[in-house]
Image (cartoon, rainbow, N blue to C red):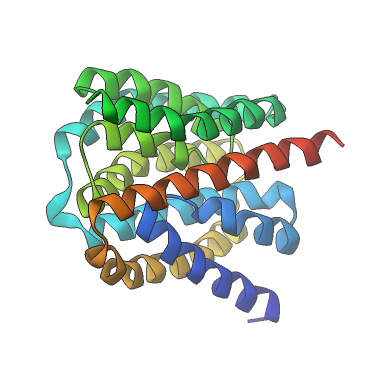
Length: 245
């Protein structure tokens, strides 16, 4: 294994640990490294495979806390929408979508606090509608994990239950995206192997993260979530600016 793979594994371990604590962020952290090592054409399908493994690891780490009703409601519409979005990715530039999501994520931080003060919650049918929208966007852009973060928090989940249910709900979307890439020739055996290698470090990070999550109280967890949403939003705006420059 060359030094490039060692670097990918090291960054992947950090990304997996962070995403294992807050439920998202692995793609945002790891993708620039994958683009640098393998080029943008391979980086997106590699990250799709790695994301499947990352979500699987969070499910395994918090298996007993998965809310399967919420997972089913989100996935039943999200899985076909992700396949449609992945097909659209082959023809649609994504910088405008990055701008929209980035602004949305930053705006959701004060909105979440306002909604929490008014005791706003969502129900299963909200999850089903949101799954279709987020699923389609997931097929187009590299990561929409931060979009699902406020969704499952508003549903009333926290800590292990949030991490497990968000991961279980996202797993089907990323599997659908990966299968679509494979059908249209973007997921060769070599790309698949690179995705598995990158994903293995994300999986290890998720189990390292579990001990930290158990020590967080609910208020601290939500503050951490606010931080990652702002960082994710700024990152997407930056990516959009770079892609248009």
